[in-house]
Length: 147
Image (cartoon, rainbow, N blue to C red; front, side, top):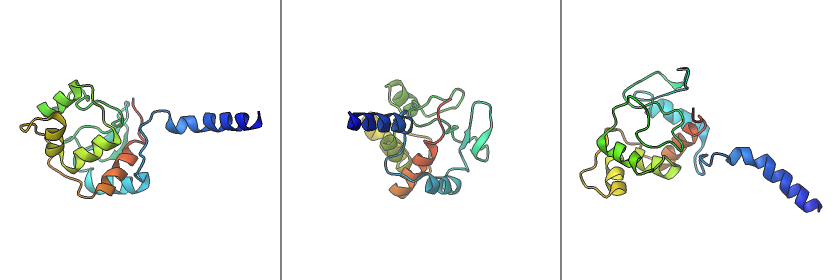
């Protein structure tokens, strides 16, 4: 009975950490914050529903990345995504760690492979060159919950 009680207590304590299922399994959020500030702030911002900027400098070239983990591609109202990103969002896909890392390392190539369409294109020209940095950026962005 004691083992069951301890196991149950540990499960309850661990539940909040894994509740949304969007935490990074490989990235380091602190390193991701540094990489976000080096590689992403020129185009992206992380701003909550009230408009408070949580990361970045209020750039608007790319979409707001608040709550990206688990969000459908192309979901920010009023942002002009590529047709391919909108098509991907319509499939029911969501941004996971794996999809985010694949996309930021080769946006157009990843879209073409994922949609099985050699004409698919993304608007994001920048590529995160190192896979570890892409995982770190995802880990940082995953700390900002959905609205």
